[in-house]
Image 1 (cartoon, helix red, strand yellow):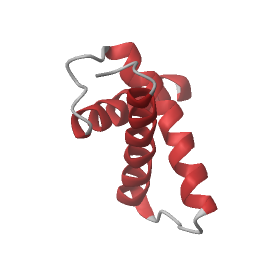
Image 2 (cartoon, rainbow, N blue to C red; image 1 turned 30 degrees about the vertical axis):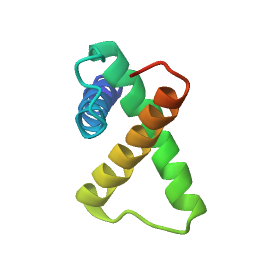
Image 3 (tube, rainbow, N blue to C red; image 1 turned 90 degrees about the horizontal axis):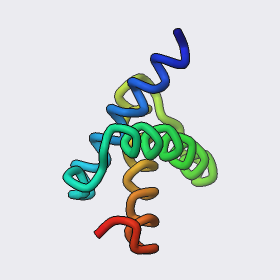
Length: 82
């Protein structure tokens, strides 16, 4: 059950980040899930390195979307997304 929740939340986070970075038309469901899950780890790592804490569900969502958007920006830099 936890894996299903992780996939759904990762998909939503990846979708929100792709809307923010204007790559939604290029990304499919699987890419949104992967970017959402990996981006959540990136966001948590970077927020921790900066000494920032995410309180509550809204804070965690913002942190995860920021991490996923950063991951998309990095992928755009490598030319994977236009």
